[in-house]
Structure formats: structure tokens, C-alpha cells
Image (cartoon, rainbow, N blue to C red; front, top):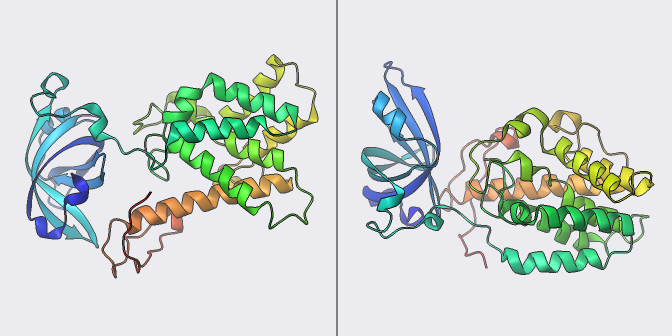
Length: 322
């Protein structure tokens, strides 16, 4: 298991799924492969030096591979140097006592139970337009919403990550309602907007183990896709002329907060400010915590691009997520 590997491991044998392969060239002109490996316990980067055309052909995204490797620490992070490898085909899974589910990280929450809670909560909201649109879209894309990741690499890139991220925003919104009770806020819009803000990712992501975006995702983006979902569903339900539809669309379109962060429009509703702020906070906490989990207590993370290249100090003991 990846989470059992440490700098003292020296030589390891590991079976993992290749999440992403990157072909690069060293200073000496020879090619090498960067392999992002994953199993249900975590992720680790491996490098195959002096790679051949045969290696490039065999070591593709999604392949299950058995590697013999040596450990080393580079810029505070543990890496593997691949000495040899064997591609394991699906028909050989039983021989190796493995199955597909062993090579995906899952969200650390009970998706099924919490999905039922989410649906029950939406049904308790008062605005019938938000409620009908949200429930109908979720019913249509229930399987994808429960299983897909929220991103390829930036945040919540795990099976069930899209639901986990959306549910976290809902829980965050519910938690702050009492704090901001003095403000005139349409909380039903906040709740339904939080749930639907990333719903376009059911089309943007290429499956539950997505390492790439779909053509639709690359050309349109999840924000535009989610906005179209709401618009089309409003027409289907005979609600297009209701102003609540306009507000729900704005909550999705403004969910990244700023134009330079990918939002077609910036928040012009107080509810959109809340949703975009919670979205950014949840994504940042996930990414920083994920990078901190890769280094020992007392060490610093590598530079995190989404944090403007800043590094963070791990001053806490690691704990189990319950």
C-alpha cells in the first residue's frame, strides 16, 4: 500500500494504477517517464529513467502496474525510482489477488447516506423553483454526481469527490447561517446554488477515475455546462420566466468569484459571494491538507501552484479521517 511507504523503505514492490503518465527529457537528452501512481491508500510519484518507446506504449493512463522501485526524497517529498515493472492485465487480477476497486481513492464520507440527507434537506426548502430544478437535475445525474471526482488534480480528485465537495459547501452554508442572521440572505438560493455550482462536472469529467477532461469539458467548461443544465431544466419544467431561475444561474456562473479564476461573471448577489467564498475555501483546504499529508511533521510542502507558489509548514501530527 502506498501509505505504508516511507523514506526508510529503501526497496519496495507495489501494485498501483497509473493515474497519469508524463514523458519528459532529462538534461542528458534521454527520455524519462513521470508516473503518478495511486491505490486506495494514497498517491505517489515515480520515475522511470532512460525510458524506451516500449515503456511509453505500455505505461499509459489507467494501466495497473507492478513496480519494483527504490525510494528517495526530492524537495521534501517521497518519490520512487522504478527499477523494473510488469503491466497487469484484467484477466490476471485474480492471480495477483487484486480488483479494480483497490486502485481508487474514495471520499472519506458515506456518500449514499449523506446523499439521502442532502435530498431530504432540499425537499425541506421553501422556494419551489430552486427545489424542483435542483431535485430534477440531481435525479437525472445521480450516479455521476455520487461517483465523479471534483477535478483532475486541483482538489477533491477522488471517487465521490464531486459529491463530497458539494456536500461540504452545503454543510458550510448551513453552519454560518446563524452567524449572519442579521443579513438579508436567500438561504435557499445559497443551499441549492452550493449543490449545483459544480454540477457541470458530470459532463466535464471523463469518469470516476478521470485523469483527463472530456471534449465538452475542454471546449465549454463545467460552469457553462451547469448553467445550461439549469436553463434547459427550467424550460422543461415550465419555469423559464421565473426570476428565481435567473438567480440560480448567476450563482453557478459566478461560483469561481472572479473572471480571472474562470467565472464568466463576478458575484452580483450576496448569495453568490457566499457560494464562491465557500467554494474557494473548501478547495484550498483540501489542496493544502493533501500536500501536508505528503510530508513529515516539521517539514514544509513543495510549492503549491494554486497557492501562488507558497509552501506550507506541517506542524501537526497526522490523524485518521473518521
